Length: 69
Image (cartoon, rainbow, N blue to C red):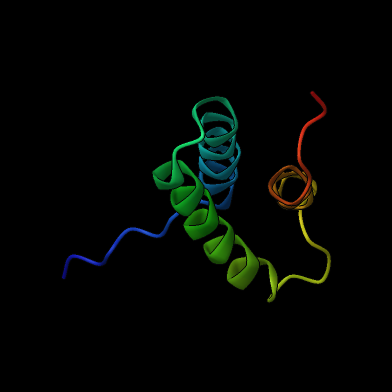
């Protein structure tokens, strides 16, 4: 009767970007792991789409590239 609520892709994009930002500021591996977890969800959700959402690509780029110092 009570179905598990589906995670919204936009919410997961924000989580991935924010956790990555916290990881870059504080250097905590916990934040990095949470960002990676959100990205795993996004990659599986976007695999079924014809074109990935721009936010997914942006989050992936932010996770992959070190910010300039």
